[in-house]
Length: 511
Image 1 (cartoon, rainbow, N blue to C red):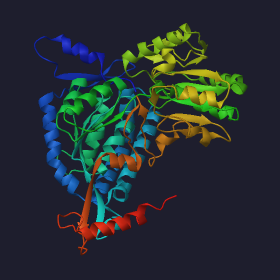
Image 2 (tube, rainbow, N blue to C red):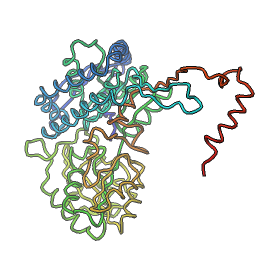
Image 3 (cartoon, rainbow, N blue to C red):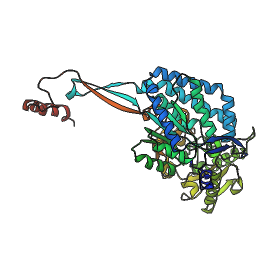
């Protein structure tokens, strides 16, 4: 996704030569109206937050799975009880329609429930075979909490996306320090306070929220947390990874995407067009796993493009109840979208719907660009706006080659009545939806993450729980075998003679 750093942060940093700013305001992206003012956590405040979380970690990590499950589900119930108020806040601070805000909350609740209810199954101690040569041992793996997890969240899906780290880290027995984006600070604070309010008997520090710009996130990386989970741009993710390397702090990075959809010759054209139209423009196109590129077979190109255009002709940006999607949340992203549209047209592409005139900040109307040069910024770089490029291909093989050419590899989609799964298995991506878009993001049991410039690690599902735990291997010698002291200077020549007979029997008869 796009960067979480803000131009406002840079402006504030240079506004005074004597003292850094101590607070900032979150605003309605549609009107510029101030929603709330928040204190900026400096290095000292960030360290204090981590210390508080560290003090609470022993209690929270020491609770059983059942107690943590109850606490997480109480958190869900508190969010549901205040859903209308919360969705109003999401609409005001993020800009998305209230119905979309509710859908985002619903998905987050699904993941909280899955993490809470499946943590024990995934993380409980497991016995493993010690093998023939160590048969006098028992062997087991115990998953331990890491301790304190720092979470740096995005602004585009300010509830759902960080929840993939927050809920799973908490379910695994960690405490969390959450730094929401400066563009969704009130939303992030609401999420954290809901957990605290739902669990008044827990020690202070299980869920701590800190506010600020990029400098606050950088301070969190340096503050001695046991893992950093970051969602944002690839460029910022690389900086975080480099800073974390100084202390060998592990990182989970969910970065950008340039997700492709392949529409094969046997696709359901109407269904594919409907999915592409929605996947490209929902949330104003500010979706890291949204649709940005489409490769359509030449035999169905004309009816497919016509259907996409027909659907999006009736889609409108705005902030009223009839709007299909809202404003661009981050003002600087508007210029990036405009530049990508201009790059597409300059490289020989054609706008069959909209164009540069579709950009009227803070809103951008849908833009459909066809047969854009593959070297254009509009194809190579993450646009993060309500635009889509559609390229005609000779066959599925060409579509797969072009889809895989990107430096990103987050999500993808395939439309084919007969060959969807076959095509999906050939795509270089972290996830693929067949005959749908973004289906994988709504299934809590499926891990989510990317390859290449799209990041490192996985949230959601069993892998998401394991990301926030550390395996501890335990080998217990149950009894000694006479003459088989392999790990001792008392090992005899007879023992070695026996081994030289046993090893070929165990491992040397494969043909």
